[in-house]
Amino acid sequence: MKIVLIGVGQAGGKLSTALARHDDAMGFRAVRDAIAVNSANADLQDLPLDTVLIGQARVNGHGVGGDNELGAEIMQEDALELLDEVSGRIDSATEAVFIVAGLGGGTGSGGAPVLAKELKRIYDIPIYAIGILPGRDEGSLYQVNAGRSLKTLTREANSVILVDNDAWRSTGNSMEEGMTAINERIAERLGLLLAAGEPVEQDSVLGFSDSAEREIAQSVVDTSEVIKTLRSGGLAAVGYAASQASEDPDDNINVVTSTTRQALLTGTSLPQASEADAALLVVAGRPDVLSGKGIEHARSWVEAETKSMAVRGGDFPIDSDELISLVLLGGIERSPRVEAFMERAAEAKRETTEREQTKEPAGEGFQKDELEDLC
Ligand code: GDP
Image 1 (cartoon, protein in one colour):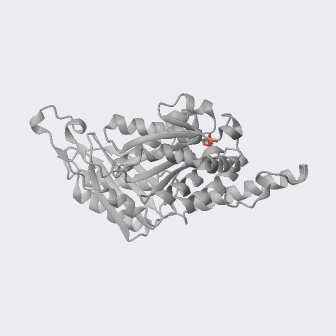
Image 2 (cartoon, rainbow, N blue to C red; image 1 turned 180 degrees about the vertical axis):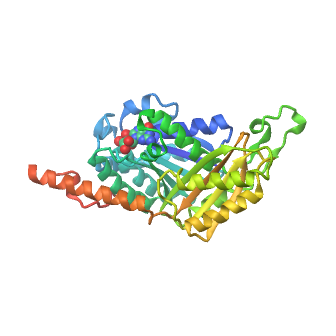
Image 3 (cartoon, rainbow, N blue to C red; image 1 turned 90 degrees about the vertical axis):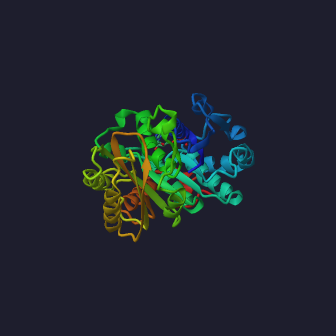
């Protein structure tokens, strides 16, 4: 899929950078352009991407703190300037735009839904979002912000792929790994999804040195399958797992099925999300050891597990000793994790409101609305 990435806010800029770097390092060339947008000048300084500073008239480059209403307002005010900057990057080959944002902060949380709405008014291609949910231990303001942002973003974007910051802990790695390491792991997973459907040059990917052996591998998975899987809209998640491949494709029947189980049961970007409206299984690995039978078995298993009749499957050739299963789940609103998160956000909202009411009469700010829309 040929895409343009727009990172909004600090997390959005950093994760977009990780995604662009991974895409480049792997030679996928799915990320055709990437920019970072922020109201905090300092957060744009170290990014290797083109950057756009918004809200200068209102916050003078100092950011919006945790105020996502202000984040939404300044995005709306500076939308034309930003769209102008973006328009030179989206061309007839672009198949989708991905807006990347942390939903718990201010600029990304408030700005991403507004940007999605504005982009959708202009472009016919899908406008997707990659939304980062705050971890359980993050303060109530993050939860409240994320709850409101998620609701609005789900309405405005064609689909929101959720990345739960808690997911990286539940797979045995703590937050102490640092955000950079976490972003790299997210980029490895989402990067493969973005690349699925792109023809990959075998000489770069499969390491052929003899030019006579060079040819273009046509991947079985097609970009349109990713778009179809996300067509129902709403929330989405990505499952990922990798295992050592055997040299014998027959032995890899079991490797593919067990790796796919791991991807869905323990490796999703949103834990406990397994029921879905639609799914796409992509199995990546060396073409000479990939097992078509294994992929078909695994696809049937995903169908039973997700309780969806719309499960697509295919392979994606990469130069690796491993077999990687990637499962894209579309339409996961009913998953226990989403319900738990919305409950957590509503609870945090109630607590914040109560605290504010005991302190002083309600003024401007978060207490004035009931998880209502940001724009
Ligand atoms: P903004 O700059 O106002 O949009 O706010 P942030 O982007 O800092 O959003 C804060 C939320 O994003 C919190 O939930 C953080 O845990 C999360 N976050 C901040 N930086 C990163 C990052 O680099 N990676 C990830 N995965 N999450 C981040």
